[in-house]
Length: 569
Image (tube, rainbow, N blue to C red):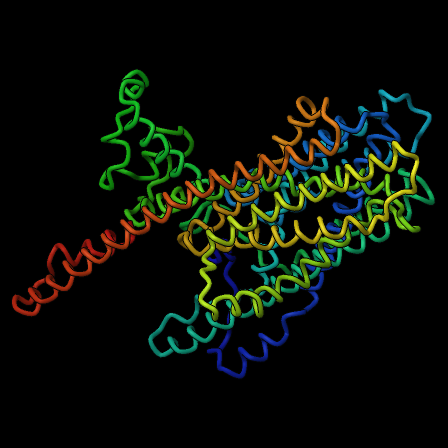
């Protein structure tokens, strides 16, 4: 979904025909693409593998109590999802995607080695092992976060066919064919890519807990490290065959997008607090006039970054940025969901460890979610949603997202009830509860994920301009970081003095409060959309009148020249 115009030029040869394009499209799984897909699978085995046993490692090996272990697990996830925007900025601005993946992959590998050494060598004191663990996890989180936004885009770059040689009028039909094939190839690549992610997740959650149970935590970290080292040796093996992204080229630089959105927020702040803007020397009426907004203004006056730029920022780019900022308030309703959702890998794993596992490992219950996701997504898209629409139900994205929040709250009320039953059995000396009683809460939270997370990302993409999609993907990843940060703070403070069942119920209540706030936000969004639609109707009427005048005068009116910009806003 990033700008594909930044690819290095390629020799295309003769004009492309339908048959040639079809043959190239059918040859998607070439050695270069397979190398990237295998690399991603091995990296996901590493990430999900060490993460599956991490909370138990904190408790059993590093001797942290449960609330501290859960808080540390949340902060690890927070850092892993806070770093992707920095990797994307480096890839977009200076390093390029290939070098960003390679350099951050080295950090990632070094972190996994340090983490494995701390777990393998039990002769170290507990403080030394904790120090090695934290150093390793910091490097791992920076590494995985840095390559996360680059690998998928780099893989998609490889399946794009260059159309720069098809510029003449006689080649317009062939160029259209190539554009359509490119879209199909990218869509097919992401389907393979998503499948590899799930294969890596399922394989790691299936294998690593068994290794931990039989050989200890050291080997449970060493095996994922070996997978990662294999990935980092395989990836550069096709370096000469890759299409390399040229950093800084193209009109949709992610760094410029962040810069422009920051300037828009600054203008709104100055408009709302004019006294503060006078104190800081900022004036809202001059910040973002289309006539004086250039990249040089952004760099010298506001951000002191790149005085050499001379490419103007158009009215359309301003409209795109405003539209992206309009979507962000809806996305800010997601962090509370992620705070609850990511407790599957920590709190629910600890809950499973106190139940009758029937030979399973507690971490292996995390397998249920990715398996259900692969089943439920096509089920919802092809059956449930069409059936509900056919019966006249309103399943607009905002309604689905709100329903997802309700389902998330229900899953944690269910978990709280199960926790009460477990505690009662422990106090009365009864048999352990069957671990498969966790299936209802896991199933409900999976449905919530589809309704809220998948729909939220779909909503953000559908309502944002093409040039802002990479920016919104970065914001989406940051919502995960924000949610896990809040989770870490709560578990290290307020939740520490509460029993497990109460914590689950409090989380559910927080989610219901978030749902109420989301309802207010949704009403605001719908009101804004209604106003935009009304303005669009008025603009269309004005354009029609201008067209009638044009027919009589034969001249282009100013209304016609500006109507497109007005409709975008």
